[in-house]
Image 1 (cartoon, helix red, strand yellow):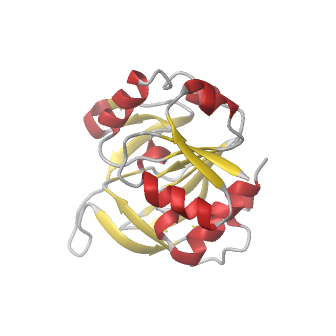
Image 2: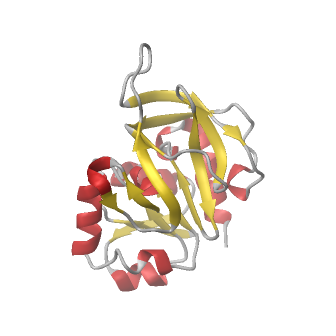
Length: 197
């Protein structure tokens, strides 16, 4: 088993690589378009701002080819948000794999933004990514923007309102949380991703 992690400049690249290696998978980091296209599975991580991430992907010459991939693709945190058409953060045009706009979380008493911490996952659809993961399992989130519920939502989380925690459109899936920081439940989700074909 192997996965290619897109070098999007995020600080979580090493921890994500180690998470796959703990599962017995070969995980390499690259921003080479030919390597990405040839990979069995592709992971698009991301931290920071959507505008900066999209600039890095365009500068690497891979922003146009990513939406055309046919192998399993997993966007993580900002990487999931980049799968959408737009982010409200600086009105950023994203990859356009999923219709809609990612919007900023609204702060409230007891609900600071960014949302940082553990939150329960509630499945809305059956999906191979959720195999062996019980409803209500906790996953680790760090984000200021989020995607609303839609037909692509596989599982939701609550943070003042119901929001997309896992999305899927064909071979593209995304998690708003960090599976590499989500203990055994996160490891199970990554293993399920490695099993996709």
